[in-house]
Length: 398
Image (cartoon, rainbow, N blue to C red):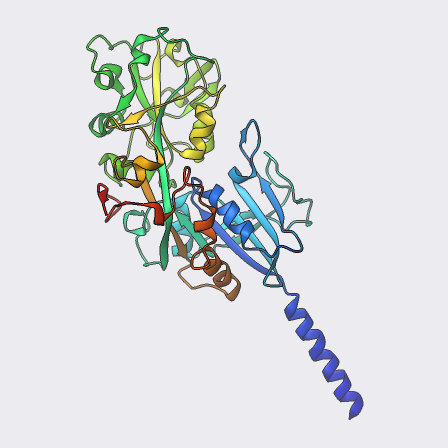
C-alpha cells in the first residue's frame, strides 16, 4: 500500500510539473498598419527573465531590417512564470475579422527552434509553418463596416490609427519644375478622390489648372482584406462596399508599369509593398496603357509606418494634404484631419482559451497596447480630443 501511495504521489507530482511547464499558445492576425505597436505590446507581456525570444520574418526595410514591420512574428518566453508562445500573421483587418468570425485558420511560422525556425529578423519567409485557428484579430475599423458583419464579435477599441495620401516619386531627389503639373499636385479633396477611385482623373481636376491635361492620376491601393482600404472608403465617402478601379504598380524604379495595363478592383495585399512601389520613379515619362499617351501619376493611401518607407530619403514619394489639412498628431487629436480609424481587437467567436484570455487582458485592461503606441504612427485614446461616432462619421470635438 505504501508503495502504491508513493507511485501515485510521484505520478501526481509529474502531472503537476507537466501542467506547470505546459506550452501555452496564442494566435493573432489582422491589421498590418497597427502591427508595429502590437510588436512592442506583445513583447511587453512577457516576464523580464528569461528574456523573450522573438522571430520576425517577411520584414520590410527602412535602411535596416525592422522587425516591427514583419508579416509574421513569434514571441517565446514566460508570462507570469508560465511558458507562452504568441504567434502573429498579419493578414489585414478585413481578413482578421473574417478569421475570428468564422473560426478560420491562418498560416503562422513554426515554433522557434523547430524545423529551422530561429529567433532572427529576416526579409524571407520562415522555413516551416504552422496552420492554426486565430484567437485574436486587430482591425482598423469596426465590424459594423466589415464585409463579415455576422456573427457579432466581442471586442473593444484600443487606439487610433492615422493614414495619409501620398503621390509617387519622380526623381531621387526630384527637382522642382521638371514636371509642373506634378508640382501642382499638393492637395486632394474628398470629391476629387471619389472620382479618382472610379478609374483615375486628369491632373487638372486635382490641381485646378486647366492646362494640366497631359497626365492622368490613378489611385494605387489595397485589396479587400485591408482595413486601410475600408478606412479610405469610409473617409472619402466613396462607399465601403463599392468596388474601386485602382492600379497595381509593377516594374522597377526607373521603369514603373501598370499591372496588366488596366485598372483593377483589387490592389496590393501589403501596405509595405504598396509604399515601395510608390518609390518607383519614372511614371511621368512611361507609357499610359489605360488612357494612352506618355506619362501618368499615382496617388496612394497608406498607414504612417508605410509612409515612412515611401517618404524616406531615397524613397522620395511626397505627402499630400487632405482637404487643405496636413496630417499631424495634433490635427488628428483635435479633429481637424479626418483620415483615421479606431483600432479594435476582436475575440474568436467561440471564445478564448485561458492562455488567450490572459494575453487579451494584458493587452487591453493591462495597458500593454496603450503603453506601446508612439503618438505619431498610432495615437492613444486618452490623447484624443475628437470622436467619430461611427466609422462613417466626420470627427467632432469632445
